[in-house]
Length: 115
Length: 115
Image (cartoon, rainbow over all chains, first blue to last red):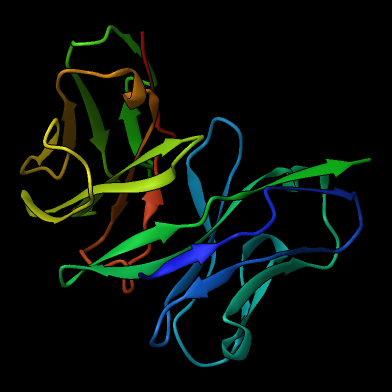
């Protein structure tokens, strides 16, 4: 079955430090991959997406992600985190459901920023 | 342009009752999807409506239903509520159907508590 795995439930980083959130997918063909962020009390906001082409994808808020087919990964990175980046981050893949597309989400990684 | 709005934001119901949640998509958006978010199961796709027709459905029992009106507003209904239905219900709208082609914009959600 098509799925995504986020191995890290909770990550803590210092403000100004670099960040990498892991995402592994399981899919036979080229996957359509997304990263979303959810702040407390908010809905989800799309950070970036990968469909094809350049494997390094730039998103909003200074985030980027790299698609690595050989490792079945789509890790999210940011060179220097800000306190406002504290949130929950979800990786998602488009899966086919009886011929129709739907988003299948990972379990999320909660990011805590310490001063 | 106003974002996706969901009403009510918070709701407390008793086991066995039914509940209706409402979602108003971004103006001009014709597709509305619903998701359930719980700590145990994460984010799960409920269904998608496009042009007043259910286009796609997740793996939820028949107690969960929805509809879409001609102005693209959508409602979801849960009958015979169970304790396990306590969750954050998120609505997302997009211009057209098709997750790959059209970005989904999420509302803030309705927090349903079943006692």
